[in-house]
Image (cartoon, rainbow, N blue to C red; front, side, top):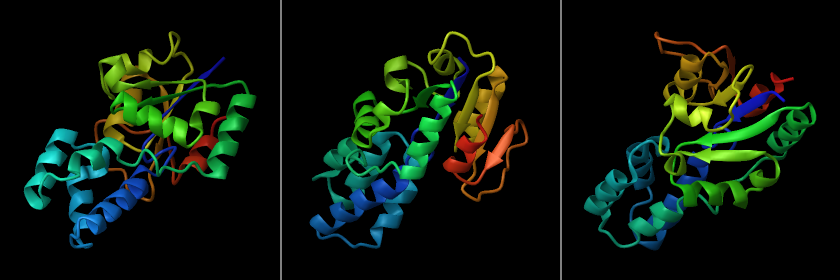
Length: 204
């Protein structure tokens, strides 16, 4: 069966929207300026900034109370899987593909997202960097998703983590651009799609 590898955050789910919601509530509960949500989102950088660095920056600006709880819980209880994405995952699997999520992050938080939004019932498995002991774009994390990567596809929103990793292994890749221009010179995706539903639609 062919293997489809798919990123989690800001690919299958809108992690940033969920995190923004959590930060907005945090600021309100702490009596802090609502406008600071943009500062937190900038520091967070789509989840790519190390959590300890984010915690230190937020503690320096706001004080430590509640910061670690926010970051540990994060967006896990707020992520949403849209019906069109769920339908496309069902279609891809019905077409004979094995679908595995490959994501950087902490095991507890990423598994919570996967289970809370119902992705655990729509994919064949997942590989999380903390448990795997390596992070995208390290080829090892992709190999951990399946012994045979011949003919495998990788879908993700990160030019560095997802597309560079796929290119290093010769995988067919789909970059979920969200309307962004491609700026990397060293590698290019096989396909570009504006959103995850369009990206999954390329897999047949």
